[in-house]
Image (spheres, one colour):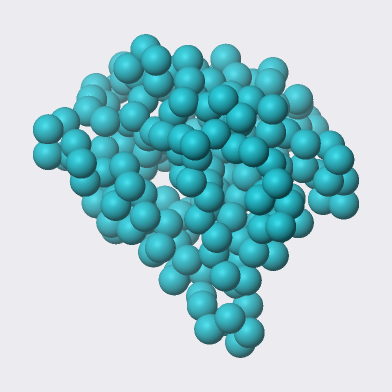
Length: 217
């Protein structure tokens, strides 16, 4: 059974399931701040770890596997979350690699009626410094309603680069001023704080994905 960290109201009509990035666990400062912000906005938030990351807690230093190889773990996490009596509308996603994995299983789950949307926080469009190694092929035909939150300083995909990718019309990319790959801005330069950007994330998810059917879920 997948182990979850839970935030937000237990009776929330919408649950957001989040996976971590390649190098930091589900209780990293970035993931905690994101979960708290979404919880404060009225979402139930569930975080989980892929096996390789969970193993690090017991001294097994495993490198991140190929993202595709953990797709079954994300699908199992959805089933395990439902087994915990989490009903209603479910949005899946994650930070960096976690969001990428979610994006690879999203259409299968969406077509089955298991999920209502996808949220990616800092999508790794390509490795830093290697813009030719794109991770966008499956995004061209994505059918799941998707929000990608990307900092304008993200080395994994700049605004200029992303504009050329031909992403599916189901995807909306929301740019956060001066944000890095963790969506963290330099307040002295941008005037924004990480908390400001996370509040924007929560408000945009609510506006785009929560309001139309939240009352009927």
